[in-house]
Length: 280
Image (cartoon, rainbow, N blue to C red; front, side, top):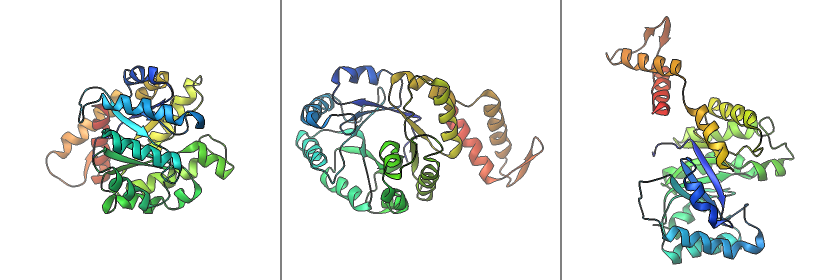
């Protein structure tokens, strides 16, 4: 399983002049968005701009952030045109985001239609049916979709269909179910963006809550959101010192043991290892 990103930054495929700026934002993943960020009348032009940019990328490039593309839903005409454009252009992206996933068959189709176009596949769960089938979708990683690495919450569409608020409380149930389904199959969990760009305090609070709930990554819609989010994902020195101490104490090979007056067993050791991974 690839190392989980902390942040994903969306950039509209309508705005190719912003692609390089997004790539320089410090985000771990930059996603060119062909779906919600593009007006229906400008899908063709946006698709052409995205394909041209991707052609300039070298497969397996190790410099800069990972590059992703969110295509349109595979059950739509725009989505099928996206798939055809990627296939014909013979391009490669690090991550393919598939929106409105509702079954394992859609993920299997991406592997069949675009066998060489992407390294990782992320399924966006953003409909009530998708939430209900999150476990089935995640389970596709074991057979139909071996390059599936994460489930991502899609909050805008989901909140609209649920009649819920697009905020932490309104989507809390879906968040918990998505994290559980992802973890049950060894996948990463990515959270929806905070849409209030001006509210940095709210962004920090929501990112901290997402991390506490078990998410690996949080999406963003503006470069200014990246640094505050990374600040949340960076463990404080006290956490790092504790984690190093636990891992050092565990090096002797014992099972459960006492550290600073607290019992440490396998789950706490894994927590310490995860903190050190985040710190790195």
